[in-house]
Amino acid sequence: MKYFLIGTDEKNRNPYNINKNRALDIRKLTREGIDTLPRWNIISMDLPDEGFFPDLICSPCILMSRDCIRAVTIYQPDIIYKGVKLWESDSGVNRTYFLSIIEEQDCMSEKTQRSAMGNRIINLVLNEEKIGANAVFRIKGCDKSCIAARLDVVESLLRRGIQGITIEEVQLV
Image 1 (tube, one colour):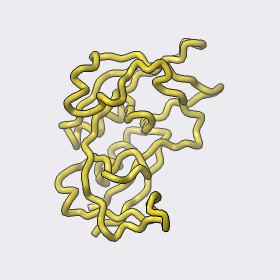
Image 2: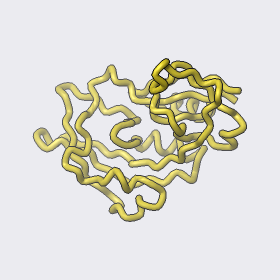
Image 3: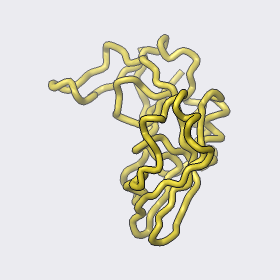
Image 4: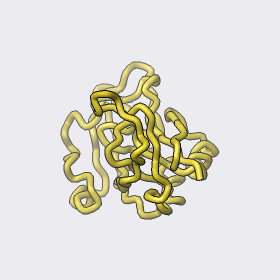
């Protein structure tokens, strides 16, 4: 099976300074801690002129649009999520997202190539056995992209017209 890295396309004029009001405690974004958050959260952000809301936002946390979360939970139903309203106070522009808790997998192969300093991944290689049956996951020790997903998940996202993302195939061993 093929796997892909999916991230936010930074070439777009995306929202920035998300959570500038500190309404969301990033430390609680775990399977256990998310239960302490309210069902819906209002988070401040800044939006550039002619701003664009991508269907997947990776920083400071994983935020998915309604279409994106619906597609992803078909293949990985154990994903926990809470509603979030991104709000730009000056203009009143807002958009609904879902704060998603996606499991981290220790599936990076020893064949992964790192920079000489060891702090940057040059060529990511995943161990297919360690991935198991997971369709959507984060990669432990990799900040190269937001999430990794199986080919069928990526196809489903593209059929739904998901916008503002980058997709990059990953090597497997």
